[in-house]
Length: 283
Image 1: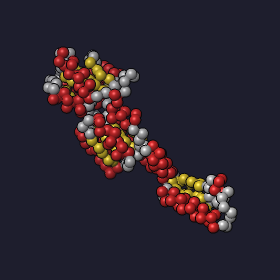
Image 2: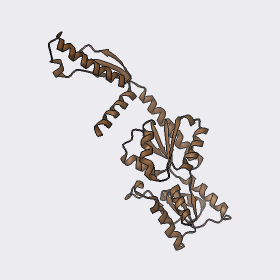
Image 3: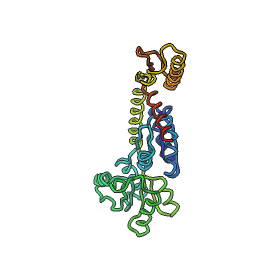
Image 4: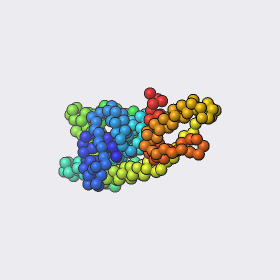
């Protein structure tokens, strides 16, 4: 399964594209209003999804940097095509005139390239998340909203462009004109295809055959004499533990020639069991 996490409007767009690609039955979604919900939502989907796709870089960074998730993580970046789309809509609303704007989230090179293609000067007011001294996960939506509002109140810009729904909502409540930069369908389609490929690869790896060899410890080998009642009790207890392990691994059990046991299972079952053991040790 593929988990998609993001604001409601972004998730709705991604879900529509996923349905067009025939992936509707393979995705689970979670939406949030603020980034504080990301750890909880990511943990929920991590239990059942092999891939988690975030609609933005900030929630992706939050999940990547401190949650210890098992799923593969990816995010849908905002690129030049997304900015082109937003600028076209702005030009239509302003009778072909491009107002002075402030912009957040996008890398400087992508913004500069887009504006050069249009033959106009790129915006000076850009809050980029590619600052090497500050992780995207350290930003707060109120910080980003304040960046835009300050420049608008000073008269430096006429319109604010944001890639973040929470920032758009905050600026609207403050009476600041704002436009949301949304992902194009092409960007969503590419990200979903990439996530689908990762999911299929993970399922293929998980289905590979694995054989676990369970051998008694050396002190168990030196236990009671062969054939004694105590030796048989030890063997029964050991066999019960091995049977329990084989059940957890969903495998088949057989005796090895040296007195140990062989459990035939899959790589995915072994990985899941190791993850459970690790989680139990950390609790």
